[in-house]
Image 1 (tube, rainbow, N blue to C red):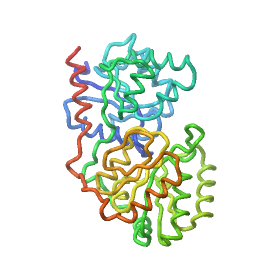
Image 2 (image 1 turned 180 degrees about the vertical axis):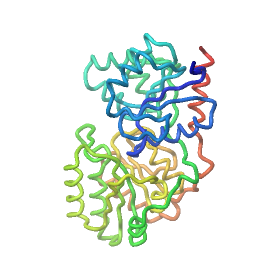
Image 3 (image 1 turned 180 degrees about the horizontal axis):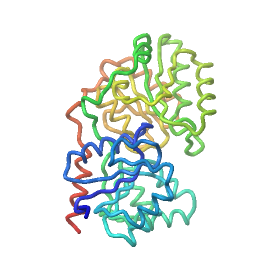
Length: 360
């Protein structure tokens, strides 16, 4: 019989494609590999199945739901996806199946659930109340869970999503990107999805990044923008965005459509990392840039790491002013690289697992 005394079932994305949650899970599983825990990660968003512990269920989700609900046996079930149906299934499982249930909330899913309807707000409240623990990746999400949903503070744990990469995992950018970076100055860098909207505005501020580059070109004729695209609402929208950008700034922008094995090395080689989002979670990419010493300009839509230089969310003039001011003192903005010294939030998650199991 399989031993389940310290087993964990994880549900969420695994790279590629690379995004905040998938990178978080990739690094969390590496720490789990070195721990006393046995685990299985079910990846419902891509075909990635890099070991017998990481299993793609992208093309058999109905079968997976039945298997998870009826047959999966674990001490801990941990959900890492904002998918509403997946959360409903988790809530029902928590009512009828043994084990400890944990949900990680890393983005704007709580606010979206509240804004949809009173019924969805009530269902969200019911789901989260079935959980043994809720991990909020920043203080804003924690406060929303308490003040907007009405959850008890006792079951909410604020643990940032960022888990530092291993030094050996930081790769050099591909040759074509290194050539672009070496032939431009200053080089701005950003990442995001194309086409995602919140309050009818671009979540990742792709529009603002393109306009910023256009505004800065007269004073910085050799400026470059590297934009790493993690995904898009449609291929047509990607092409439209690229065509629009090229018409405005020409070869001053480089879109990365391919899935790189690592982007931390890219952030390290750029002069400034920009995060003009209008809503956010913990923003793993911000902490990755700071991890390797690259200054960060970010919107004030949520609480940011203290090293970030902030501007007013969706305020194009303030964004431009803040970046211009930063570029005048770029040498003073560089932060001390934190390789090997960053807080390890994976340890906090493992400590939570230990606490939940000990309380059985």
